Each structure stands twice: as structure tokens, then as C-alpha cells.
Amino acid sequence: MPRSPQLHSPAPRRTAAWRAWAAGAVAVTLSWTGPSAAAAAPAVTTGRGGGTALVDAAAAAAPGEVPPDPGPGTAAEKAATVPAEAPAAAAAPPEAPAAALAPQPATAPPAPSPADVAPPADVSPPAAAAPADESTLVVQNRPAAADPLGSRLIDVATPSTIGRRRLEALFTHRFNQPVNQGGNAHNLWGLDSGADVGFGFTYGLLRRLDLSAYRSQFQEDYELAGKLQVLDQSARIPLSAAVRAGADLLGRKGVADPHRPFVQLLLGRRLAAGWNVFVSPSWVRATPLLRNAWNVPVGLTVPLPGKWLLEGEVIAANHALRDVAGASRLAWHAAFARQIGWHIFQIVLGDSRATTVDQIVGGDFAGGFNTHDVRLGFNLVRYFSP
Image (cartoon, rainbow, N blue to C red):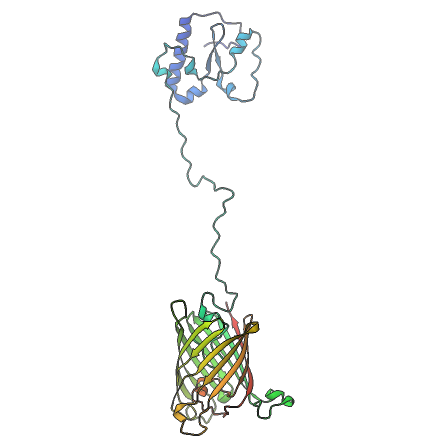
């Protein structure tokens, strides 16, 4: 085993043949052991005097460190201890075998797996889809429902549904005292008189299916109904349409036929913002004076300043009673409506106190009214959403 040149006196000069033999042996050894051994093998350097020296590769691999003082010796011998930058194969003489001088291919490191690759710090994961906006009363992207209209206009149902899992609460008041028949400041134009009060609920079982229950104080009239919307106005569909069916059940004693089924076809078209037209062909079995009653209530809305709507309904006198004077009269209602949050307020003027299908369609309301009567009233609608 050769001794380290750092610990002994300068080595004597050796012949050129010996140097060629030593360089060839080192090169062959490196080719057998591969790149890993070559990296760990000492480098061969040639001094100024023709001598060779072995330099530890580990010492050369430490960048920025000053090699230790090799001790006594000539400057040429000290220079021989500096790590060589050229590979060992380059120090071989021309007569060395070509196979020994050929560079060995480096082994490529394995490709990292996708799990080991960290995402860039500035890339954030995609945001989750925003939930549907339930903070507004009007269902979005539905032109026919863009105006604040409930399940009914004033007393007549509209083709609109209230939306899935929503609840509509309805309160109605129709005062008995007409303003044009004794109404004045002393009785607040009829507000001091009694009133027909109604209360009901509508529940959106599905997006296009509503179930409703309503009770009017007059004759203890209960109205149960279901409404199915079959058309919803859009860019391709010119109008909205719904079918509503149910029954009015009178709880007051002495009524000849308290069970009164009905069917309605509800049609509506939105012409512009605030402008809506409604037509509602209706049939009911049994009214105070008719066995089968047919009629076509008509409705209209007009926009007013301040986000108010002027709403109107007209129910013509029933044609079947045209030969009986005063038996059936034209009924009309007008309302000033405004949406405030999840409420719709309607201040109502009209001649009739009727609020259910069996009382409206015949025009023969049992409570009696004249076409020129003007009564005050109001509707209050409140919506609830899960």
C-alpha cells in the first residue's frame, strides 16, 4: 500500500514507463467499479517533477474549505496536493486503452411521482360552487316571476308558484261598510265596521307544484287546492300557464250544498317590467244561485313610481243569470302593492267582499253588493324559506 506523500520526504523520480503503467491501472480500475467508485476514487495528479500524487476526493468535494498544510516539502509537492479539476481519465497518456478512457453513462434519477410534487405556493384550489341565492323573494332567471306577485293577484289565483319548500302566509281583510254608503271620518271610512277576515297558507311542495289551504270568515268557507304550473314564461315560451283544482267547503249550517269543487286554467303573460296580464277561465259546481258556474276573471298590473304596482281584477256578471235582474253583478278590485323584504302589502279597494272561488265566479255573492260600492281592505303576504 503506498504511503501518503504528506508524511514523508519527496519521492524519487520514476521512469516514464512506470508512470504510464500506474495511470493505466487506475483507469482500468475505475472502469470496472463504475461511476460511483470513480466518484469516490482519489484523483491522480502529476507534479512538476514528473511524480504522481493521490488526492482524496472527499477533501476536494468540500467547497470553500482551505486544504490543510501538508507539512514540510517543496512548493511543487504542495501544489500536487491541490484537488484536480479534470477527471482521472484525462490524465491518462495517449497509449492507454480506449475502453478505459471512455466515459461511463450517468444513471438518471427516477422521476418523482405526482404525489411527491408539491403544488406552487401561489396556486389556490378551485373555489366551491356558490350556493343558490335564497335571500330574495323573486326566483332568479324566471322572467314571469320577476315582479312581486304572490300565489294570487288580489283574490284570483295567478299561474306563478312560490318555489320549492317555501311557505306563503296570507291574511285578508274586507271591511263591510262601503265608503260611499255612510263612510266618513267618524267611522274612518268604514274601518270601524266589521270585516270579513281570511287566513291561509300555501306550501311549495315542488318547484312547480303548490298546495294551499285558506279560510274565509264569511260562511266559514274553507278552500283547499293544488296548483300545477305547466308553462313558465321564457324567451321561447310566450306565457305562463297553470292548472288549479280543489274544493270550497262551507262550515256554516243551513247551506244547501256546502261541497263545491272547482277547476281553473290560469294564464299569464309579462309584457314588460311591472306590466302583466292574467286570464283565468274557471268552473265551480254550485254557487248561491247556480248549479254549474263558468266565468273568466281578468287581471292586470301596472308599474308605479317607488316600486309600487297597481293591480286590478274584474269578474264579469255571470251570463247564466242575465235574465234575473240583480242576481249577478260585475265585481272589481284594485290594489296598491309593494314588496318590502319578504312581505307583500296590498291596500285594496273594491265592491265585493268575496275572496274564494265559489263566491267570486258566480257574481252572486251571498252577502250582496252593488257594482258602485267602494270598500276598503288589505292583504298581507309573508314568505318563509328554509
